[in-house]
Image 1 (cartoon, rainbow, N blue to C red):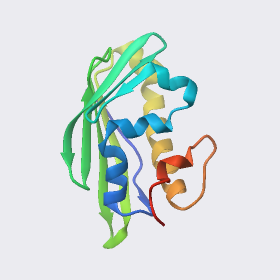
Image 2: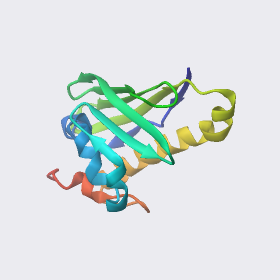
Image 3: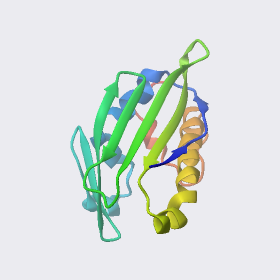
Length: 151
């Protein structure tokens, strides 16, 4: 398995708020463009999508309240794990050190095609979380993911 780690960044929200946004796979449906939702199904523990003819699924394997959520492939064309970390940031209860780790079993061709883009995508997610928590919206980022959070 090849491992990819995102950057670590401080999100201006308490760990429990970020954790709750990620804990239920159905929450992710609201972040999708309307025209993509018909290709995605979700329940509390899993999310499945058809992307360019491939069925890809994830299932929650671990929930450590307000600290970590782990996902594993569930019907994807290759094995992978994703870990989301929500760590208290330097003693400030209103801030979270957030980062993502991915381990993927990619063959040589897949590593060449998408390996470099995985870390880039992970860093973009982290940057988006930081920007949204501070009221800044990066290009292409949907602020609605924070609509239920109180500032």
